[in-house]
Length: 223
Length: 80
Image 1: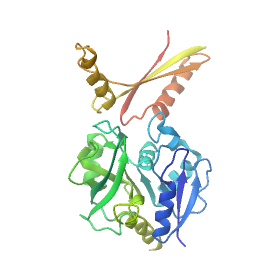
Image 2: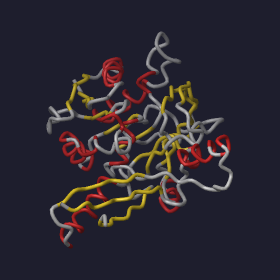
Image 3: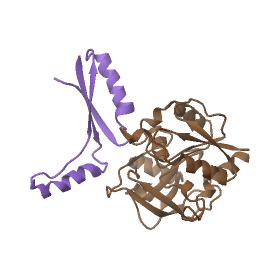
Image 4: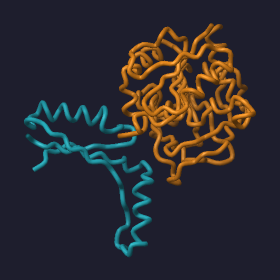
């Protein structure tokens, strides 16, 4: 069975939900530990949401130097699918696997809502089960979700189709160009602020719009 | 021991919501002469001697860990 590892850092909150989502998609979820420089042979990796290391210094900054991240960075460069959700996205930016940074929401308050997104790129390892232009509803919950990058970087992301998700209707945190998620050049590393692992069942979330993240990765790995 | 100070500030073009919140509180306290507030971080590092090699190393620490060059600038100085 195709396996997807979920890293638990001190302060991770959504590692268990991420593992549940992977299992719901038909994959084998493997728990990985921040202090182990070992990926246990997994085929893909999720960096979950939360407040790793208490968000001390900067969100994701200290986590990006955790022993497991050395292996994650190597694997990402080798083409292994890596998904960073919320704090995981911040860690990917701090690790320089993705460009830009996440800063405090422009309205200065923590926000928790079901957020509509537009899928802009359905060719990444984590979005091939969506269609371009598809509108999906995914929970968003963060205090530091404003995506920023210099003009040149934003222009490059736009020109190369590396904006994967955009916020629909409202810009909830001041992100440049309504950017909710981006990918690397190769399309195997994706980071976004909203939480697809919270949208896998009608019982516990706003629907099942998040499930295709995980089925996409499983499909990308088999093909 | 010598103390080396690293000041980290958000880049001028980056929105600083914390500074804006502080600025917004000033008129409520009766302070009306301040037109802008930017909030940053100050790190105090203790070293044996602030020689060129040590300062170069601290600059590297500031660049890789203490600041995020995408959104922040830093200045290294020896505490007088």
